[in-house]
Length: 597
Image (cartoon, rainbow, N blue to C red; front, top):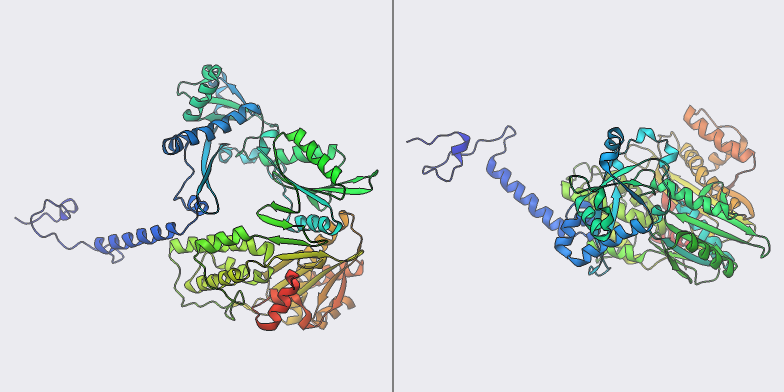
């Protein structure tokens, strides 16, 4: 009896005759080779997951944030305590006002947001279990953004250069430095609009168990409904509300915002003839003052206002993932050893390299195979991770990370090799800090700006910017130029114009901190470019976009805001930020960038 070739019988284990050969798909694949391919992909994915840290596993979905029930089932009383602590904090701070859902206007009730308690497992540097942390988050993704203005939902944080300026001034003046972290910061700020949330059954059960009087607020599904009286994490306006609360508190106490850096606040203490400065990064606060008693009084005031602060005193501070070392007189050292070690460990990096790149840095091999989806995701993640470190303490690596960030969506095996080279260099230099020192009063701000002409595959140039307040890079930038230029002089003009913006920003921030500035110098090694700017006219025919840059910079020179000066090519430190470099010149410029022996 012939076998029925229909799909339901073709692969049946009950068939006593030989099954027909699987029919190919439209693209030529067969059921068999497709299954093998899927198995190989699963194997690769498993190997990839095994190499990830806990943080990355959360990101890639291996370890997702557990629900309350999942966490309690797996971790028992430890997980239950973490969830209980979070819910009790919300009650203690009077974040929620419970309401009866059936008494709410149906139209208003329809806008009620979901909520979820995220339960995360924290591990120490050795990968060992440390603690469980829980946080109830409102479903801000369901809020109607069109009902809010941008100013109601956007919240500033101190910029990296702003933070470095605050810390460097503290180091130079020998100020007392105290850092603090406000626990549950958002939950201190009051809401301005009506926002209702629905609390899941597991959390509702725990709340009723803790506070039996809440049972009458349960709906037919055993869930609680509450009005957010304070800024619950996850809501789109919460970050802004917290910043407004903190900034208004400081302003009420006599502090003035830096006009160009809204997260820096200053106050002049007339009796003591000293300035105190406060920098804000979300719920992390840095306080500096030459008078130790004033610094302590500020912290005491913040403690009385916000209750729970985790405070660090002394010469060494961890702030936004960086270690600030104020041990040496008038010098600031910045390191990120923990972050570097984590990156190196998860990539099994044991080799070292003398430079972060090779001569092929900006070259793209069109024949190099693309990375598969799993490795592409890992490449993207690792480039982002190392870029975070490089931007902060390893400016000599910026040309590599600026290029690799352009490759994350089309990454190839060649790009992976470039990443490996960078990690090998970082492994060999992980103990080297970024050291910053301020020049003598009045301070000279120097913006050393260089470019490499037509260095990319599309013949666009590359800009390097090194800004210093004395020694070491207070800010360093390495970026591909956005337009094509006809000559090296035009490329330099584009670089000088683009570099003038961050340089003037540094000038403005420093002046607002009360520092006496002698001048802002923009250094160039191209005499034709200098001539164009200083003489007040372009040499030869230029296009409109070049003229715009020329006249913008020329105007700054004319009003005395910027002073141009010539520097020989071999002294242009920013040259290191425009291309691959090696040998003595590499070490010479790295020494200047990092301010190391």
